[in-house]
Image (cartoon, rainbow, N blue to C red; front, side, top):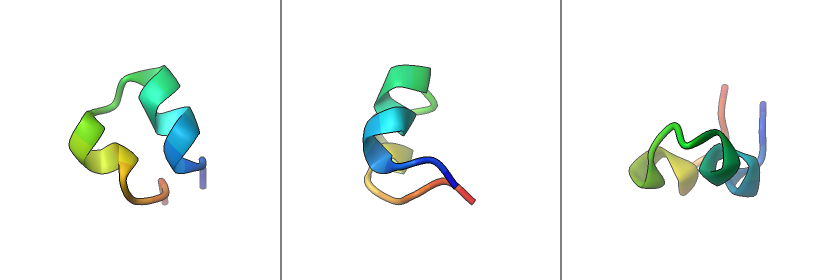
Length: 22
C-alpha cells in the first residue's frame, strides 16, 4: 500500500491520509 504521505499527493482524502492505503 501507499504511504500516508503518498495519499496526500493523490488527494484521496486527508482523513484517509492518516492510515496507509491497502
